[in-house]
Length: 224
Ligand code: DX5
Ligand code: ZN
Image 1 (spheres, helix red, strand yellow):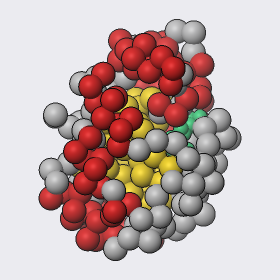
Image 2 (cartoon, protein in one colour):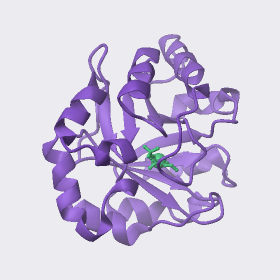
Image 3 (cartoon, rainbow, N blue to C red):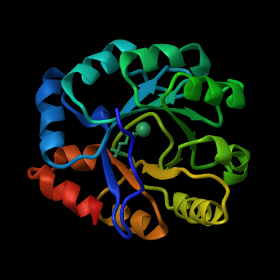
């Protein structure tokens, strides 16, 4: 599976978050997003401990893998992601994103993800300082800036992420790593535009995008 290149100036890659899909019609939902121009899919894995919600595990990631060729970014909202990384890679993840706030040894877990041959992502929650992520920038392929407290779709965008996106662009421009900047939580046409302008490469959108009667137009609006 090929991975993604940084989008052309001004535009963004679009990642529908399957959390907002109709899981009784996953095949149709994924096809709907693929033909609408989605660049990758975002899969939210929750353990009921790191976040106050439960979703799905490698079994469902494997099913999604069989339904699409789109790259899969698996967002692990787990207290102990290191225990499960291998299963998600075997299920077909193209990128595995862990949280800087988790309990795992972060360097070792990022190494583990890279050694398994997939892209390494690191995410941070709205209250978390970007300073916590900076030491890892040279060993990640993706930084996922949360603009809601993770756990549920449909929450309001927290603009605290915008300065983090700008600082990540500056760090990358200064040679501190080569990673894509993704943003997740409350993304719609308006908040997506401000994130793009701040320098986000990937916009993750769940409830807004899946609500669109014309998802191709929605993807186009997010892409910019
Ligand atoms: C939140 C998840 C998000 C969520 C986004 O815990 O990480 O990916 O699905 O959903 P919206 O776009 O509805 O905020
Ligand atoms: Zn997510």
